[in-house]
Length: 94
Image (cartoon, rainbow, N blue to C red; front, side, top):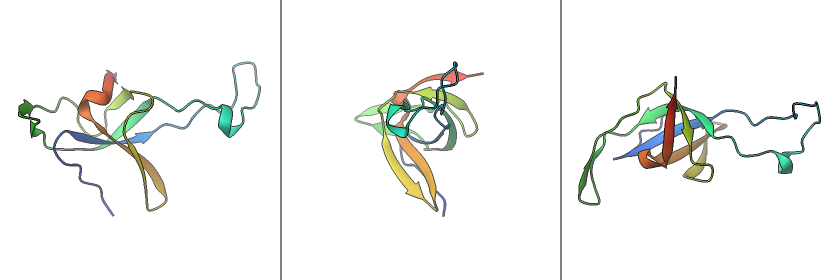
C-alpha cells in the first residue's frame, strides 16, 4: 500500500529514538523523547490552502527536522509514519 498526501501534506518516517544515554544508561520507552529527525517518504502537490498558494519546498528523500508533537501518526503495513503540513517542518538537514 502506498500513501499519497494531499495539498501541503508530507509523509515522514521518523528515525528511531535513542535507547541509551551518552553515559550508557538504558532508557525505558516512557523516558525516550519523540524523535524530531525524519526522512520524507511522500510529498503532496501543494496548491491553494486556506486561500493562499502553497509551493512545496521539500522533496522525497530529504532528511528534515519536524516539530516535536506535530502531525498525525498512522501505521500502514506494520510501518509507522507521521503526516504533517509542510509548515510543521522546521529545517532540511544536509
